[in-house]
Structure formats: C-alpha cells, structure tokens
Image (cartoon, rainbow over all chains, first blue to last red; front, side):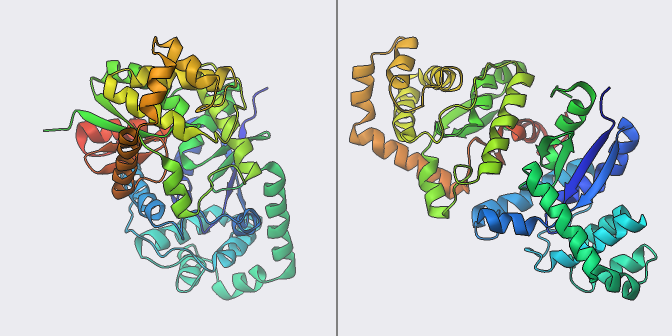
Length: 203
Length: 203
C-alpha cells in the first residue's frame, strides 16, 4: 500500500522553507496526504559539512531572495524582502517548535514566526518575533520559553537532528517518503508523486 | 514586447545540466521560444566563491545522483549513474562547445558529450568522450581540438565566463531573460513564464 504520510523536515533558520510552511496546509487538504512536521537543527549538520549555503556567497544570496520573492508572488504569499539573515538564534525557534509539536500548536507557531520574519523583518528566534509569535497563537511566552530551555527539549531536538543526519538530510525543507529524500520546496510535487506512485511524474 | 529568447548558460562539468541539455530542443519546439546556448567555465567562479557544490559533501552528492536519476526517469532520458564526477577536464569540453557554438554544431556536441557521460560513464572533457562525441556528430577531432586550444577560443570562453560573473551567475544551468536569472533545470518553467508574462506563474 502506498504511504499516506510525508515527513516534513525543516529548520527555522531556512529561508526557502517559508514557501513550504505557508502552503502545506492547503497541500494537505488538496492531496489528502498528511504531513508530519519535524523541526531539526540544520546548522549542526551544515557545520559538520563545513557548508555555508548563502551568507558568504553574495551572488547566491542575492539570487536566493529574488527566487523567493518571485515564488512567493506565484503562490500569493506576502514577502517584504530581504528578511534578516542569517537568523543567529534559530535554535531558540527550533526548540519552541519542538515544544509546539509535542503540545499540538507547532505548525501554528511556525507559520506565525515565518510571517513575522518575512513580512515584519523580525528575525526568527529573536525578540520580538519569539514572544510576538507565541502571543499571536494564544501561547504564554514565559511558560513556553521555560519549556523550550529545558534539557528534555534540547535532547529531543538533538535526537531529531541525529535522525535527520542518519537519513542523509543536509538542507531544509526536506520531504521524506519512507526513506526517499526530496530536498527543497520545489521538490514537494516530486515527493507527493512518489507517495502516490513510487515514482516522480509530471504535474 | 515580451522577449522571445532565453539565454541558456551552462558549463559541461555540471551534472544537473544534463536534464536541460536533453530537453531544450523539445521545449524550444513546444514554446516557440529560442534558446541561446552559452557555454562558460563555472569552475573559475566557484573557486572565487570558495564553493565546492557536491564533491566534498557526501550526503549532498548521494542526493544529487538520486534526484537526477528520478528526474531523468520523469523526462524519459537514459541515465546510468553515478557518472564519473567531478569532471576534472571540463574546460576542454567547454572550449570545444565554444568552437561548436561559433561553427553551428555546438548543441549537437553538448548533447553527444552528455549522452556518453551519463550513459557510457565516459568522463566529459576527457578521452574517449571528447573524440567520440565529435565523431558522433561528424566532426574531425584533430581539427576541432586544434581550434579549441587556440588562444582566441580561450579568450572567448574567458569573456563569456566574465559576462556570466557580471550577470551574477554562480551555477549551471542558469536561464537568463533580459537580466533576470533562473538557476537550475527546475527553474526552466519559471524562466519561460517570465519570458511570456514578466512574472512567475504555475504550470
């Protein structure tokens, strides 16, 4: 039987992930496929690879924003670019997302934090984004931040980061169907196709 | 008036460019847009950026081949992977392509060289790929290699590489409409959309 779930691995310092974060609910409704949101801390894996995707590469960075701008417009998502980058405290956002996935409000928080990052230029993982995003979704910042800083949360995020590494993940977003990896918002259709038919098809 | 031409910037050491090289003639026929093939030597630009896209990143390299394999299957192109990589003498292939574009048989040579690289595991830019690909398309290897090594050809490739750098190009393939950049075979539809309507649209 074909799998009916796709794991959505993401890290909150990732810019292109904005597109996936913003459209996944609609995709879920239109396809009937459920997405399992799995925050991990990509920065650790990138540091192990000695890889800096954009920040030290001006031409690539310029292109990144332009590509996101054009594709956000295609999807009809607001974008006030460039957003602050790199997000130096993305680990805080990833820890909060980890708490949120456990408690059930994770995707809501992620969407709120990306909205503030990409429309209000509030750096993700930093204030006022963190407390503002939590208040936006009706969560108490003080309570959540205490949980986010707890050792159990740090251990949970580390475990997910290890699981991502073991799968061969090296970027965000990555969609995983069984053990098949699809990297990038632009491979979401490929992942859906794989989920349905075990191969990549047009459309 | 909308532009009716897209510049197709490519370098012959690039793996994902196989997909574009293989489908561009069909795309040209089906869209009525003409593609101007412009070989350049990306390696110089990557070295300036201190960027090694895949060769020192095992997880990313594994993924690269898998992604190309799935997408080649989607398009119906043959692929016997992994192909030899990196292509250490890609400059030779780029110089020959430069001669070929001048003389009119450039795209034919590029397709032949990619076919040998991706189906026969013959490294591009090296023998027997170079002479074999030239013979495949009815060109005399000795004559062409003499032209490829001429100072004028080297200067022409350098000039195109400088033009690519000035446009902000950092990868292959890159499609350019006026001065708008679209990087990757997976952005060809975006480039076509831009060419027709000045924005990126679905489909």
